[in-house]
Image (tube, rainbow, N blue to C red; front, side):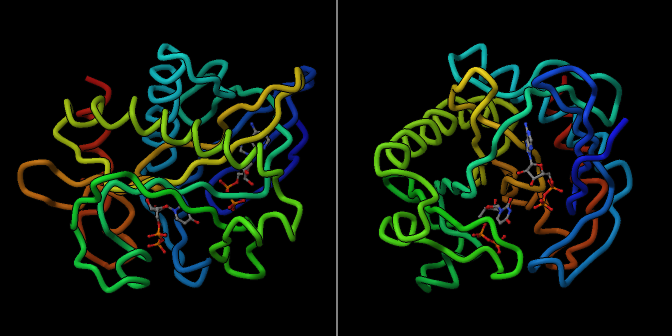
Length: 232
Ligand code: ADP
Ligand code: UDP
């Protein structure tokens, strides 16, 4: 099968089926725009299964996603999307770059979720964009920006309570959207501890890629624990 693209966390293959691709989830992990590299054992298996679970749950709640089926432990069949060159970040509490940008303490709850758009551009280090920058770069019309905001907030509304039932606080997460062959706007990529901050609702312990980013130890264990809680 034709490898179409190899990214930092996944490989995308042509399946020969029109309008579909296979996404293979790798164990390799990167942080700080690829400056830090490593392996998280079994991460690909955990992230493929969790993404499949979250996408299924979202589509059961009226949100269009690219997910078709899980082929095997590391591979998902998905609709082939023409990706929009933006990362959409939703935040429920202060963490990471929002803490660095504002000085607000990590963990500060936000009364209303905050949305941010980042330019999917490794060479530039995925910079934060405002609405004018998005227009300047012609990445999305104002109408599309409004639809992305609305979709991302809906994802938040559906995933937050789901995760809380697993004793996980959804602190923030990143989404990517694209156009499917039918011309519909669809949620793509993955939803996993690589792309979400998940804090244990009792202990506050970090259960996501921050353990790798910040050398906190127990990386594999945290991914396995999220898997166990979500898949049970
Ligand atoms: P990166 O490109 O940041 O290194 P990944 O390793 O996760 O990230 O690579 C996966 C790539 O596949 C990303 O560029 C993502 O935008 C793209 N992608 C995600 N879902 C789809 C899809 N359904 N169809 C085509 N491309 C997709
Ligand atoms: N995120 C991601 N991919 C990126 C950048 C961020 O999945 O390229 C996720 C990250 O895991 C977190 C959220 O988006 O859940 C917000 O990340 P932040 O802006 O705080 O950046 P970071 O701390 O990752 O540099």
